[in-house]
Image (tube, rainbow, N blue to C red; front, side, top):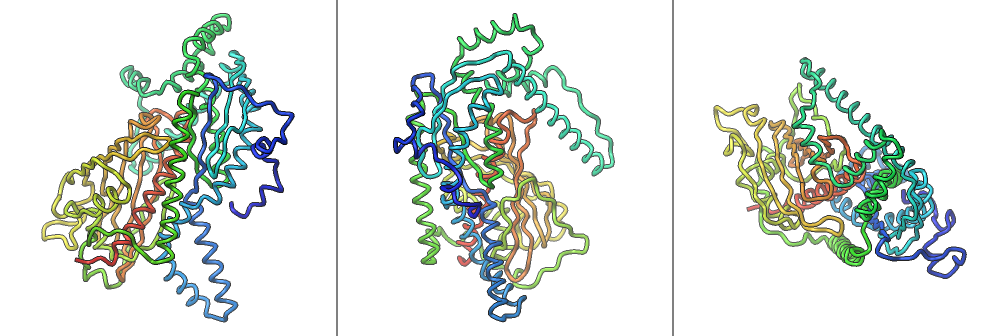
Length: 518
């Protein structure tokens, strides 16, 4: 993405032209209490890390050829060096704002040019302007001028029908896969009225408004038009915000094509100033964190360490590791957020992550690094004392530990786009032996926007690679129990960005504590 081309030579920047007074043909839009503001922060995705590692690997490989080094030894030496620094590199790449700044310039201009025609297709006439832009953050001011309700109802009905069709097809594919994996026929379940009403209660106000416009499509326009006019008089701000929220999927499609992630928030005029100040504070805090990471990378500093939270070295981790003949790596979830090798023995890390006697995840990761608070981590549903032990006692097998469940909850810190919210997490051990363990989690965040519409699934696979090293693969995917909402891409993007940061944070913390022994 970084090397796609020079922005200056490929486009005219509307924001710069307006700021320099070169845009005389455009009149500034009027700002009043009806004006809406689209706030966007562009962020790096974990793909940036993968691309950077691949680039460095190729550069090192070419250097080994020109220096007449033996290829396999030269590349192996690079891999050995990369294993020790890959997590730091991942953190620095995610923290960098170079590419997001470039994409923010492109995206702000593209939205300025494309939003009005895109809304016109829906029957909505708007005027817009790039109101503010700094670094990866920009603001578009939008005024809704006119609504063609007949056209909007028709477009909304088609959009809702297509979304429901895709969801039904996905449910059918999942049902067929379950049939193939279990060998049993799983019938399609009919929705009872109670379940249907429960699904309606989980909808947000924007989802309800979209469903209403879809339903009213079947009513004659003589009736539907007055109803929509009255509705707009009663809840004008909600309707205008819905209209802009309905196009966010198209914006996220564009950003995903650039290999980036982003956060977006549509604010009314009275809330914009406070939100903008919060976003700018967050950007300054991110900049301080980036400089801190760069300084630690240059000096080799590790930062504050609480103590030897990974536990003692385990003798069995020093030897080689050979998987059993029937071992096959578990299938990853939809999006792989991180795949790295760690300089920590497998059994030592297994104890630190899974044992309830370990304070590593609570004190080092959640509390110190991720800044979580009000942490409550429950006990395993069975074999509480055996899970995480270097060696199992007689009478307990690896199979006995599989299926153990643990519930946790914690308060996540606020950001500019999301208030402080409690995450309710359920962890399950789906694989466990001396070569690999798999921890699968399901999280529910009801306090975040659209939190009632989705569940966040994450999976951590740790594989024993021997010689006091292991490989960690982290992946994630979203589940929409009642069907994907109109902002499903926005939810998935936020989930990918958030979990990627957490995965990298876990890796960084493991490396920080790797040399700390009791």
